[in-house]
Image (cartoon, rainbow, N blue to C red; front, top):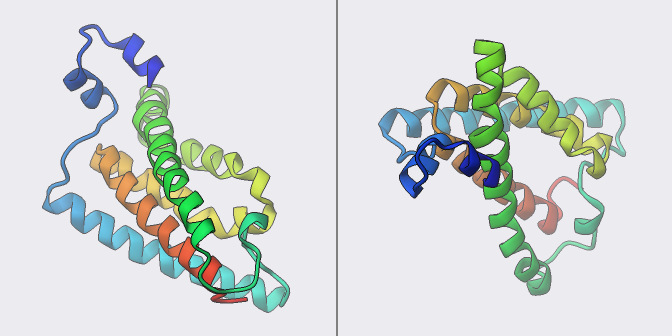
Length: 174
């Protein structure tokens, strides 16, 4: 956000919000976010099913969430602030700051390198997670670019990550 702030010709919170494309979601944004989430979930489930068909041992869960299923208040307490900072941090960086800059140079195809780079950003979680993340890392930037609203990305990313956390900690699919 500091780089976005420095780029502003007239500094102010309104200008920063505009630069980062943080807008209130309208009816169209809600429809796109909802449809995008459905598409992302279906595509992710298909990839997961195919990967598990090929390799029954395929487990796309980060090491820090691999433990016996069940409610762990300490994991949830640690996850909550990370969830907020992760979602806001990634979306403000990737879609709020970087995507508009990529659009200036790449035009309508800016979503593609944005999504590929965002997928590679998750390299530290391992190849299994990167494969599973392909739908969200490609569809979310495409939707945000079309809506020109980073808030759409924040909602999609937040709901997807929350569902993934619940699935991982509850042992769904293990």
